[in-house]
Structure formats: C-alpha cells, structure tokens
Image (cartoon, rainbow, N blue to C red; front, side, top):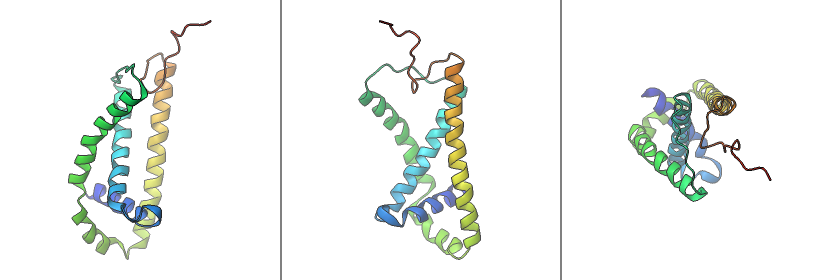
Length: 142
C-alpha cells in the first residue's frame, strides 16, 4: 500500500507542472490505471486468455474502456486525494528518495511495456492469436 501511494505521489508531482497542472490527481490515477492494465494484459497473454474480438475499432475501444474503468475506481480508493498532503510533507524535502523513486519508476514503466511487447510477439510467433495483433494466416491472397 505504501508503494502504491508513493507511486501516486511521484505521478502527481510529475503532473503538477506543465500543461496538465490543472488536473494532476486525475492524470496520476490514469497513469496508475494504465500500469495495472499493462500487467493485466501480461497475465492474460501468459494464461492465453485473451479473447478474439472480431469487431470494429469503436467496439474494441469500448471494451478496453469498460475493462479499465473498474481499475480506475480501485485506484481512486487506494490513492485518495487526501493522501497527498501527508506524502508531500514526508517527501518534499527528501530529494534523494524522490529522485531514486522517479528513476526506478521510469525503469519499471519501460520494463513493463517492453515485457508486454515481448509477450505479444512471443505468442504471435508461437501461433497463438491475440486480439491486439491481427491474424493474417487465414487472409485471402488475390
């Protein structure tokens, strides 16, 4: 739980500057939701449980949205806006820990995304069909 709150603090601190400064909490929750969704996809690929969805883009996007919505609500329960004030007091002066946390978070995000890509390519190479990667084996050749 401490780790999730610290990650939320790091994202909130990052999004507090720049163009998203008006909505840093929402941006932090969305980023954490995306990370959890990436891990969910990794697990589903390993279990070979991704359903083949033959639908248009809008339907696929709606399915992804409806999958991410409960994750978003769980993230808002785990990382409340009221948790930010104590975290700011605790970490605002501890620059070393915040810097190391940011470095590890960037490394973690890149590693998670790379693992997802590797798993998708591995499953595609082994003949398993993924709904995220089109299956061209049965395509008609003219």
